Length: 253
Length: 306
View (cartoon, rainbow over the protein chains, first blue to last red):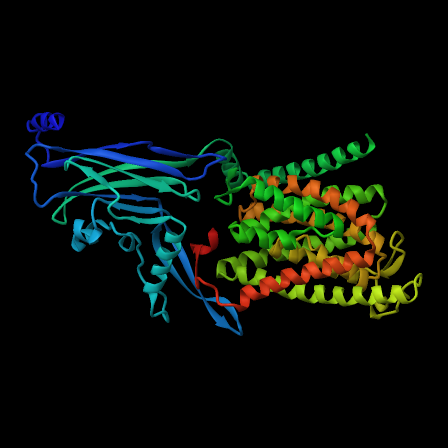
């Protein structure tokens, strides 16, 4: 506590905003290796301030981790001629491949709807869908399907009350990422809110990358697909022939 | 032990893949089928994207068939001339199949195409084989030692006749070319070797002796699936080498065991077992199409994954 008071005294001399975030990440890159089975990222930080702590309304923290946004085609099945087939399709313009929101309190209380709209924080707001093709009246249900399906595979997470916020100053939370991650820069946004209004924001990047053999195979398959295909065949045939020869030797010997 | 597949971009248990490969490999060796018709749906069930499953399965079949065909070469049960004719049809068919696959993928109907093809082909062929094998078993019980008389059908009236010495046939090249073509299309869109179509077609349509059928079909399958693998690798980037290697390590070992079991069993018993297996897979896939799925929506990459 004393340390933070001291820090507060120091920063009063700086021409900074009232309350700012100092952030730490347990790791700023996630390496997808051959044995990758998901990852847990610890996000922690402190609030730097120049004035005494205002007790009411209390300061709250909202953390949003977002994977790269990509267009998604959503298809709906209908029964036709007795079997279930894909009929309607809606292209959602941009949906994050991974999205987790962690808050220090109930979402509706820590953030006003108008702030959510401005910063696109909640899961439905993080998805951008411009319009549905003609003839589809319930375009909303397609966006809902994206959220439902991705929530089920832990790609979208709403973690209310999961940020520990001590003394209005120190906060920490952990976000678990599943194994089926898309590569790219994962934006980590921290919002400090008071009475539902955003008072400060901070952004950091987590780099999610395949490494080693995974990286090499993936690059080869994209840059030299013919060589990759031939290599797959050579490896397959060598293994097939090798096992066959080994069996014959076993039988003779 | 979990392993992350670089192309499929999912994490799966390595021992599960080895086990699946081994199980399907045993069946592959026993029946002379690639085993793809079992493996591809199994890969769907464990969460591999369908496009990756189909392309990778083609790669794995090359390996499992290679060890099988070596065993048949040593026993001299491969008709190279017939195999080459089937292969020419197969390569054309595979190219057409990949074109169709990519078009339907862009339309979001590739899943339906794959499943419907399975239900249709497995149902018809499984049913026919089952009835035929039952009849053959009854016949052999009544009068042991009698051979099936060769019938003269419309197939013998077609032009461009060629003598196939190993098979003891003198028939037109058109039926084997068409059989090869159909199998090539199936290899590309269903991720199967096509043995389950080719073996019955060779026995019942072309009238080849059962003893050379398995070796010859494996010979054709190797080249057609290798070609299909290359087509998928260069147009869709969906061949997962890590997945293929794990499946084939189990698969090649299984195939060797299977070939040995196959030589000890009678042809009729073998055929009725295969027929029952085919009908079982068919029934499961048909149910999936007929019953209402728990999730009506599905997600795909926009623009058909390109």
